[in-house]
Image 1 (cartoon, rainbow, N blue to C red):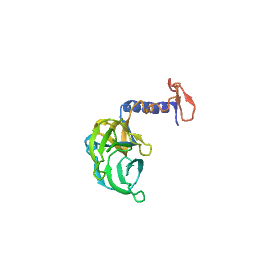
Image 2 (image 1 turned 90 degrees about the horizontal axis):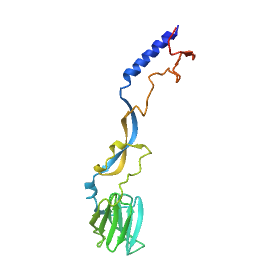
Image 3 (image 1 turned 60 degrees about the vertical axis):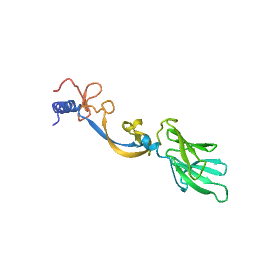
Image 4 (image 1 turned 180 degrees about the vertical axis):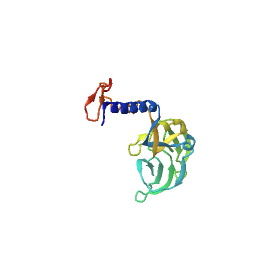
Length: 208
């Protein structure tokens, strides 16, 4: 037969367990976006000329004389000879990490490369050359996250370089006491009395 003494003895055991284990670490697994970096050194040596490529994710288009410059989102610029509009010829592709915008003045193509502004000589469209760079011309920004998972902020560090993408991974995180706290007194009411198994209320002052 369950008596009030039995209940109180059980509750005291639970309380004792809660007190002795309240300092133990609690952990939970979270799916998070962790940053993938490109170092500043790699960023600032990445502009180069490659053979012409097919369009995949075209962005901004800029016309200059008989040339067309077509942005490939975050990857670079296609240089197109449009002397014969009926048969435009893709000449070369300029690899420019993080490029989304451009402008041309005289024979210089100005492009963004993540946080840098880069100047490229296009006097010979088939052989463009980087001729200048203004570092940190633009704000440090983060790319869109994957599937709306939260960002692993502990891994964010501008000193490591530019965040160019995210990798989704499961990470163990320690739960701090002010984040999740489970009462060591599961049978205690707010008014200080205990529940018994029949749902009736028993005074917390003692037992019979």
